[in-house]
Amino acid sequence: MKRHKAAALAVLLIAIAARAPAREAGGAKAAATTSTGTTTVFAAASLTQAFQAIASAFEHGHPNVKVQLNFAGSSTLVQQIQQGAPADVFASADEANMQKLVDGGAIAGAPQLFARNTLQIVVPAGNPKHIAALADLAKPGLTIALCGPSVPCGRYAAEAFTKAGVTAPAASQELDVKAVLTKVSMGEADAGIVYVTDVRAAAPGKVVGVDIPASSNVMARYPLAVVKHAPNAAAAAAFVEFVLSPEGQRLLAGFGFLPR
Image (cartoon, rainbow, N blue to C red; front, side):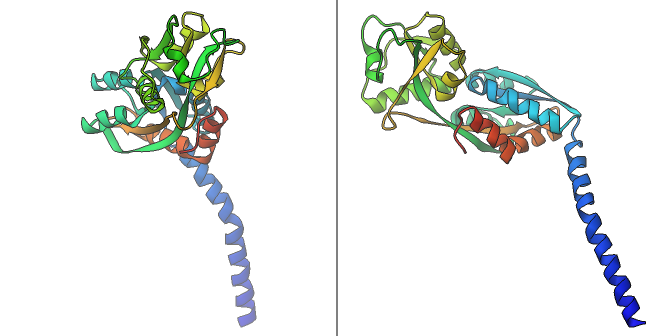
């Protein structure tokens, strides 16, 4: 009798163990479909291509959620959020602009670093002005495009000039890094300073990048967070989690971003 009971118990335990993975898989699938509706992500312009890919992958895993993307300079996005724009997630190209929202009580929880980036000089294809270093941007007769000082790429560029011991040249004051890239690619500027990822994502044959030595370069740090009073906080939290996940990090790396 004892042997029969032991055998029956063993069979029961095996059956339970066999069913456990199926329950776990079902639970994961249920978690992926919990969030619904639209989540609006305000992201720095330099994240355009990467976040488009991330949004597509996120929607594939969360079929009941639609991601709406709004790209601009980080400082512009901060102003929009401060003025009441309905944002769920904010992804900044620097910590200073994120801190403005933290200080104003507009962020839920602590922002999390999700990527890093470095700077590169961008010039038209063929480098017609033979620019080889930051010092060359200060030469007379050149038209230079830079982001404005309140925009992360503008502040980072100023830091790079200081580290290189070069006086920052007179330049345009663009609202975001994509505007700098556009001016150079259209021949309206002889050079500019953007992120490595921007040159990589540019249309083939339009521009090339000139490396800035590590001693003069600046490491850009990208934080993101759920916005306080987000219209869709559940989907926003799921999106942030996805960006930080191995899959999200793999997608970012594919566009040239450095790991967090």
